[in-house]
Image (cartoon, rainbow, N blue to C red; front, side, top):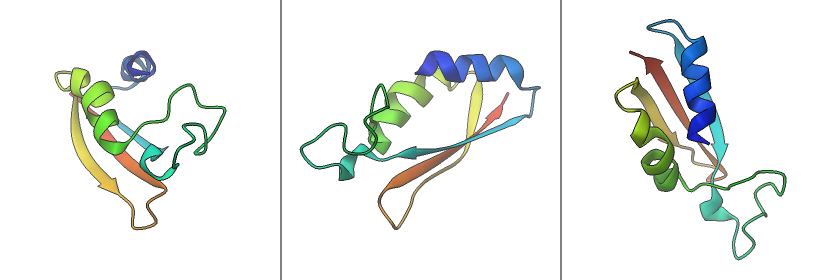
Length: 81
């Protein structure tokens, strides 16, 4: 998944913004595909920040990270350095 974000990074100019809303696997129960079976991987907010955004810290600044009150998804906004 981080390969996708790295490709988006190439497309963004310095200072460009990438915003994503990601389904939160924390609330899918025992079925890992309950969030969306078409997804290759279902992330919890913590997993996503560690595994996907973490390796991009030198390339992008986290402008916003928020879990929503509805608990179905979380968002992340990155700014290209």
